[in-house]
Length: 351
Image 1 (spheres, helix red, strand yellow):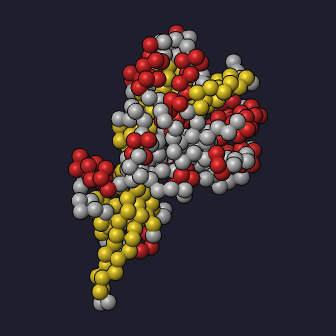
Image 2: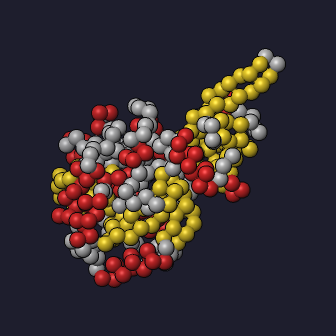
Image 3: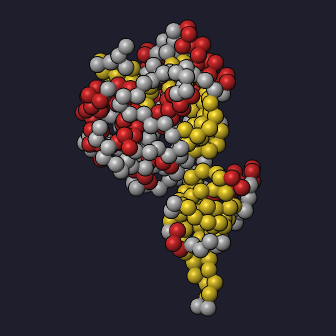
Protein backbone atom coordinates (compact mmCIF):
# COMPACT_ATOMS: atom_id res chain seq x y z
CA UNK A 1 0.00 0.00 0.00
CA UNK A 2 1.84 3.06 -1.31
CA UNK A 3 1.51 6.74 -0.45
CA UNK A 4 0.74 7.51 -4.10
CA UNK A 5 -2.44 5.39 -3.78
CA UNK A 6 -3.96 8.25 -1.78
CA UNK A 7 -2.98 11.13 -4.04
CA UNK A 8 -5.25 13.27 -6.21
CA UNK A 9 -5.09 16.57 -8.08
CA UNK A 10 -6.67 19.47 -6.22
CA UNK A 11 -6.94 22.96 -7.77
CA UNK A 12 -5.62 25.61 -5.38
CA UNK A 13 -8.75 27.70 -5.72
CA UNK A 14 -10.84 24.98 -4.05
CA UNK A 15 -8.98 25.42 -0.74
CA UNK A 16 -11.29 27.41 1.53
CA UNK A 17 -9.76 30.21 3.61
CA UNK A 18 -13.02 31.30 5.28
CA UNK A 19 -16.14 29.31 6.22
CA UNK A 20 -19.54 30.02 4.67
CA UNK A 21 -22.19 31.72 6.79
CA UNK A 22 -24.35 30.45 8.34
CA UNK A 23 -22.42 27.32 9.24
CA UNK A 24 -25.09 24.90 8.04
CA UNK A 25 -25.15 26.54 4.59
CA UNK A 26 -22.00 24.62 3.65
CA UNK A 27 -22.44 22.06 0.91
CA UNK A 28 -22.75 18.36 1.76
CA UNK A 29 -21.82 15.52 -0.57
CA UNK A 30 -23.79 12.47 0.51
CA UNK A 31 -22.15 9.24 -0.64
CA UNK A 32 -24.51 6.37 0.09
CA UNK A 33 -22.63 3.38 -1.22
CA UNK A 34 -22.14 4.14 -4.93
CA UNK A 35 -24.86 6.81 -5.07
CA UNK A 36 -23.78 10.45 -4.80
CA UNK A 37 -26.13 13.28 -3.85
CA UNK A 38 -25.30 17.00 -3.79
CA UNK A 39 -26.93 18.68 -0.80
CA UNK A 40 -26.24 21.14 2.03
CA UNK A 41 -25.42 20.49 5.68
CA UNK A 42 -28.83 21.86 6.67
CA UNK A 43 -30.29 18.90 4.72
CA UNK A 44 -28.95 16.40 7.26
CA UNK A 45 -32.54 16.05 8.48
CA UNK A 46 -33.24 14.35 5.13
CA UNK A 47 -30.39 11.88 5.36
CA UNK A 48 -30.38 10.98 9.05
CA UNK A 49 -33.02 8.83 10.74
CA UNK A 50 -34.75 8.89 14.12
CA UNK A 51 -32.63 6.78 16.45
CA UNK A 52 -29.32 7.69 14.80
CA UNK A 53 -26.66 8.96 17.20
CA UNK A 54 -24.11 11.63 16.24
CA UNK A 55 -20.81 11.45 18.14
CA UNK A 56 -19.51 14.97 18.78
CA UNK A 57 -16.00 15.92 19.90
CA UNK A 58 -16.33 18.59 22.61
CA UNK A 59 -12.65 19.60 22.66
CA UNK A 60 -12.01 23.34 22.73
CA UNK A 61 -9.26 24.88 20.59
CA UNK A 62 -6.89 27.11 22.52
CA UNK A 63 -5.42 30.23 20.82
CA UNK A 64 -2.10 28.43 20.68
CA UNK A 65 -0.11 30.71 18.35
CA UNK A 66 1.91 33.35 20.16
CA UNK A 67 4.22 36.06 18.85
CA UNK A 68 6.81 37.46 21.24
CA UNK A 69 10.29 38.81 21.70
CA UNK A 70 13.48 37.60 23.33
CA UNK A 71 15.62 40.37 24.83
CA UNK A 72 19.31 39.69 25.40
CA UNK A 73 21.79 42.05 27.04
CA UNK A 74 25.47 41.93 26.14
CA UNK A 75 28.55 44.08 25.80
CA UNK A 76 27.18 45.57 22.58
CA UNK A 77 23.91 46.44 24.28
CA UNK A 78 20.49 44.88 23.96
CA UNK A 79 19.55 42.59 21.08
CA UNK A 80 15.97 41.64 20.34
CA UNK A 81 14.73 38.60 18.40
CA UNK A 82 11.19 37.94 17.26
CA UNK A 83 9.99 34.52 18.39
CA UNK A 84 6.93 32.62 17.15
CA UNK A 85 5.49 29.89 19.37
CA UNK A 86 2.81 27.28 18.70
CA UNK A 87 1.78 25.44 21.84
CA UNK A 88 1.41 21.69 21.32
CA UNK A 89 0.41 20.04 24.58
CA UNK A 90 0.70 20.45 28.35
CA UNK A 91 3.38 18.38 30.06
CA UNK A 92 3.88 17.30 33.68
CA UNK A 93 5.17 19.97 36.05
CA UNK A 94 3.28 22.81 34.38
CA UNK A 95 5.38 22.77 31.21
CA UNK A 96 4.14 23.10 27.63
CA UNK A 97 5.78 21.51 24.61
CA UNK A 98 5.88 23.97 21.73
CA UNK A 99 7.12 24.56 18.23
CA UNK A 100 9.41 27.59 18.44
CA UNK A 101 10.67 29.57 15.44
CA UNK A 102 13.56 30.14 15.42
CA UNK A 103 14.52 27.85 18.31
CA UNK A 104 18.20 28.52 17.64
CA UNK A 105 17.71 32.16 18.69
CA UNK A 106 16.87 31.00 22.24
CA UNK A 107 19.08 29.70 25.02
CA UNK A 108 17.75 27.55 27.83
CA UNK A 109 16.64 29.82 30.66
CA UNK A 110 15.82 32.80 28.44
CA UNK A 111 12.44 34.53 28.58
CA UNK A 112 10.03 35.23 25.73
CA UNK A 113 7.67 38.15 26.36
CA UNK A 114 4.30 37.88 24.59
CA UNK A 115 2.35 40.69 26.29
CA UNK A 116 2.37 42.82 29.43
CA UNK A 117 0.79 39.87 31.25
CA UNK A 118 2.21 36.76 29.58
CA UNK A 119 5.75 35.46 29.27
CA UNK A 120 7.51 32.08 29.20
CA UNK A 121 10.94 30.67 29.97
CA UNK A 122 12.60 28.01 27.79
CA UNK A 123 13.33 25.16 30.20
CA UNK A 124 14.73 22.70 27.70
CA UNK A 125 14.20 21.06 24.36
CA UNK A 126 13.38 17.62 23.03
CA UNK A 127 13.05 16.27 19.48
CA UNK A 128 13.20 19.74 17.95
CA UNK A 129 10.55 21.17 20.26
CA UNK A 130 10.90 23.57 23.16
CA UNK A 131 9.64 23.05 26.70
CA UNK A 132 8.20 26.26 28.15
CA UNK A 133 7.11 27.31 31.61
CA UNK A 134 4.72 30.26 31.78
CA UNK A 135 4.51 33.00 34.39
CA UNK A 136 0.79 32.29 34.91
CA UNK A 137 -1.30 29.19 35.57
CA UNK A 138 -4.96 28.20 35.71
CA UNK A 139 -7.62 30.79 34.86
CA UNK A 140 -5.05 33.61 34.81
CA UNK A 141 -3.09 31.76 32.11
CA UNK A 142 -6.27 31.05 30.13
CA UNK A 143 -7.28 34.71 30.22
CA UNK A 144 -3.85 35.99 29.19
CA UNK A 145 -3.60 33.41 26.42
CA UNK A 146 -7.03 34.42 25.11
CA UNK A 147 -5.79 38.01 24.83
CA UNK A 148 -2.32 37.37 23.42
CA UNK A 149 -2.83 34.21 21.37
CA UNK A 150 -4.16 33.62 17.87
CA UNK A 151 -5.99 30.57 16.59
CA UNK A 152 -3.56 27.94 15.21
CA UNK A 153 -4.93 27.84 11.68
CA UNK A 154 -3.80 24.92 9.51
CA UNK A 155 -0.68 25.61 7.42
CA UNK A 156 -2.66 25.70 4.15
CA UNK A 157 -4.76 28.59 5.49
CA UNK A 158 -1.99 30.33 7.43
CA UNK A 159 0.10 30.46 4.24
CA UNK A 160 -2.64 32.50 2.58
CA UNK A 161 -3.64 34.87 5.38
CA UNK A 162 -2.94 35.47 9.10
CA UNK A 163 -5.38 34.41 11.78
CA UNK A 164 -7.63 37.20 13.02
CA UNK A 165 -10.35 37.87 15.60
CA UNK A 166 -13.02 36.25 13.41
CA UNK A 167 -11.16 32.93 13.56
CA UNK A 168 -11.63 32.78 17.34
CA UNK A 169 -15.32 32.25 16.61
CA UNK A 170 -15.12 30.48 13.25
CA UNK A 171 -12.49 27.90 14.30
CA UNK A 172 -14.47 26.71 17.33
CA UNK A 173 -17.47 24.40 17.49
CA UNK A 174 -20.68 25.67 19.06
CA UNK A 175 -20.45 22.94 21.74
CA UNK A 176 -16.70 23.33 22.49
CA UNK A 177 -16.16 22.71 26.21
CA UNK A 178 -12.88 21.08 27.27
CA UNK A 179 -9.83 23.19 26.37
CA UNK A 180 -6.79 21.42 25.01
CA UNK A 181 -6.85 21.14 21.20
CA UNK A 182 -4.50 22.97 18.84
CA UNK A 183 -6.65 22.10 15.83
CA UNK A 184 -10.41 22.06 15.46
CA UNK A 185 -12.52 18.96 14.78
CA UNK A 186 -13.49 20.66 11.56
CA UNK A 187 -16.50 18.63 10.42
CA UNK A 188 -18.20 19.89 13.59
CA UNK A 189 -17.78 23.51 12.49
CA UNK A 190 -20.77 23.06 10.16
CA UNK A 191 -23.29 22.74 13.00
CA UNK A 192 -25.27 25.66 14.40
CA UNK A 193 -28.02 25.79 17.01
CA UNK A 194 -30.94 25.73 14.51
CA UNK A 195 -29.57 22.56 12.89
CA UNK A 196 -28.96 20.86 16.24
CA UNK A 197 -32.52 21.72 17.30
CA UNK A 198 -34.00 20.38 14.05
CA UNK A 199 -32.07 17.12 14.36
CA UNK A 200 -33.08 16.66 18.00
CA UNK A 201 -36.72 17.25 17.15
CA UNK A 202 -36.64 14.50 14.52
CA UNK A 203 -35.19 12.00 16.98
CA UNK A 204 -31.45 12.14 16.27
CA UNK A 205 -29.45 11.79 19.49
CA UNK A 206 -26.06 13.20 20.48
CA UNK A 207 -23.15 11.90 22.52
CA UNK A 208 -20.16 14.04 23.46
CA UNK A 209 -16.64 12.61 23.65
CA UNK A 210 -13.29 14.40 23.90
CA UNK A 211 -10.20 14.09 21.73
CA UNK A 212 -7.68 16.92 22.04
CA UNK A 213 -6.53 17.29 18.44
CA UNK A 214 -2.77 17.84 18.20
CA UNK A 215 -0.56 19.53 15.64
CA UNK A 216 0.43 16.06 14.44
CA UNK A 217 -2.81 16.03 12.47
CA UNK A 218 -1.10 18.32 9.92
CA UNK A 219 2.20 16.43 9.67
CA UNK A 220 2.80 14.82 6.27
CA UNK A 221 3.26 11.10 5.80
CA UNK A 222 6.93 10.64 4.87
CA UNK A 223 7.09 6.89 4.21
CA UNK A 224 6.14 5.26 0.92
CA UNK A 225 4.83 2.11 2.64
CA UNK A 226 1.97 3.76 4.54
CA UNK A 227 1.58 0.81 6.91
CA UNK A 228 4.88 1.81 8.55
CA UNK A 229 3.70 5.37 9.38
CA UNK A 230 3.48 6.19 13.09
CA UNK A 231 0.74 8.48 14.36
CA UNK A 232 1.31 11.09 17.06
CA UNK A 233 -0.56 10.25 20.24
CA UNK A 234 -3.48 12.44 21.31
CA UNK A 235 -5.41 12.38 24.60
CA UNK A 236 -9.04 11.39 24.54
CA UNK A 237 -11.91 10.24 26.72
CA UNK A 238 -15.09 8.25 26.18
CA UNK A 239 -16.97 8.52 29.47
CA UNK A 240 -19.00 5.72 31.04
CA UNK A 241 -22.17 7.60 30.08
CA UNK A 242 -21.00 8.07 26.48
CA UNK A 243 -20.12 4.40 26.11
CA UNK A 244 -23.51 3.37 27.52
CA UNK A 245 -25.36 5.69 25.12
CA UNK A 246 -23.46 4.32 22.12
CA UNK A 247 -24.06 0.71 23.20
CA UNK A 248 -27.77 1.36 23.69
CA UNK A 249 -28.11 2.86 20.21
CA UNK A 250 -26.28 -0.08 18.65
CA UNK A 251 -28.53 -2.51 20.51
CA UNK A 252 -31.65 -0.66 19.34
CA UNK A 253 -30.53 -0.78 15.69
CA UNK A 254 -29.63 2.90 15.37
CA UNK A 255 -26.60 4.09 13.47
CA UNK A 256 -23.49 5.49 15.15
CA UNK A 257 -22.23 8.42 13.07
CA UNK A 258 -19.11 10.24 14.27
CA UNK A 259 -18.90 13.88 13.23
CA UNK A 260 -15.29 14.10 12.20
CA UNK A 261 -12.36 11.72 12.01
CA UNK A 262 -11.28 12.62 15.55
CA UNK A 263 -14.52 11.30 17.06
CA UNK A 264 -14.29 8.21 14.86
CA UNK A 265 -10.69 7.45 15.87
CA UNK A 266 -11.59 7.82 19.51
CA UNK A 267 -14.62 5.51 19.58
CA UNK A 268 -12.79 2.91 17.52
CA UNK A 269 -9.92 3.13 20.03
CA UNK A 270 -12.42 2.55 22.84
CA UNK A 271 -13.70 -0.56 21.04
CA UNK A 272 -10.29 -1.94 20.04
CA UNK A 273 -9.80 -4.22 23.05
CA UNK A 274 -13.11 -6.09 22.97
CA UNK A 275 -14.80 -5.16 19.69
CA UNK A 276 -17.55 -3.44 21.67
CA UNK A 277 -17.65 0.13 22.91
CA UNK A 278 -16.21 0.64 26.40
CA UNK A 279 -15.21 3.64 28.54
CA UNK A 280 -11.74 4.93 27.68
CA UNK A 281 -9.38 7.64 28.89
CA UNK A 282 -5.81 8.05 27.76
CA UNK A 283 -3.59 8.52 24.73
CA UNK A 284 -4.49 7.05 21.37
CA UNK A 285 -2.24 6.69 18.34
CA UNK A 286 -4.68 4.56 16.36
CA UNK A 287 -3.92 4.59 12.63
CA UNK A 288 -6.81 3.62 10.36
CA UNK A 289 -6.05 2.60 6.79
CA UNK A 290 -7.61 0.15 4.29
CA UNK A 291 -8.06 -3.27 5.87
CA UNK A 292 -9.15 -1.83 9.23
CA UNK A 293 -12.19 -3.45 10.87
CA UNK A 294 -14.68 -0.89 12.17
CA UNK A 295 -16.41 -2.06 15.35
CA UNK A 296 -18.64 0.93 16.16
CA UNK A 297 -18.85 3.33 13.22
CA UNK A 298 -21.75 2.98 10.76
CA UNK A 299 -21.20 6.20 8.79
CA UNK A 300 -19.06 9.33 9.01
CA UNK A 301 -19.54 13.04 8.47
CA UNK A 302 -16.24 14.65 7.54
CA UNK A 303 -14.65 17.39 5.48
CA UNK A 304 -12.57 16.85 2.34
CA UNK A 305 -8.98 15.99 3.18
CA UNK A 306 -5.43 16.59 2.00
CA UNK A 307 -3.96 14.33 -0.68
CA UNK A 308 -1.68 11.61 0.72
CA UNK A 309 -2.82 12.30 4.30
CA UNK A 310 -3.70 9.81 7.04
CA UNK A 311 -7.26 11.13 6.85
CA UNK A 312 -7.49 10.11 3.19
CA UNK A 313 -6.40 6.65 4.33
CA UNK A 314 -9.09 6.63 7.01
CA UNK A 315 -11.97 7.50 4.66
CA UNK A 316 -10.59 4.98 2.15
CA UNK A 317 -10.73 2.33 4.87
CA UNK A 318 -14.38 3.17 5.52
CA UNK A 319 -15.63 3.47 1.93
CA UNK A 320 -13.05 1.59 -0.15
CA UNK A 321 -10.20 3.14 -2.13
CA UNK A 322 -11.89 3.07 -5.55
CA UNK A 323 -15.10 4.56 -4.17
CA UNK A 324 -13.22 7.35 -2.39
CA UNK A 325 -11.42 8.19 -5.64
CA UNK A 326 -14.80 8.57 -7.34
CA UNK A 327 -16.19 10.62 -4.44
CA UNK A 328 -13.24 13.02 -4.53
CA UNK A 329 -13.31 13.27 -8.33
CA UNK A 330 -17.00 14.24 -8.05
CA UNK A 331 -16.19 16.80 -5.33
CA UNK A 332 -13.48 18.42 -7.47
CA UNK A 333 -15.64 18.42 -10.59
CA UNK A 334 -18.56 19.99 -8.68
CA UNK A 335 -16.22 22.52 -7.05
CA UNK A 336 -16.76 21.61 -3.42
CA UNK A 337 -14.58 23.62 -1.04
CA UNK A 338 -11.78 21.65 0.62
CA UNK A 339 -10.07 21.31 4.02
CA UNK A 340 -10.78 22.85 7.42
CA UNK A 341 -13.08 25.72 6.37
CA UNK A 342 -14.48 23.84 3.40
CA UNK A 343 -17.57 21.76 2.69
CA UNK A 344 -18.54 18.39 4.14
CA UNK A 345 -19.35 14.85 3.14
CA UNK A 346 -21.62 12.22 4.67
CA UNK A 347 -20.03 8.85 3.96
CA UNK A 348 -22.37 5.88 4.32
CA UNK A 349 -20.60 2.62 3.39
CA UNK A 350 -22.55 -0.14 1.68
CA UNK A 351 -23.95 -2.74 4.03
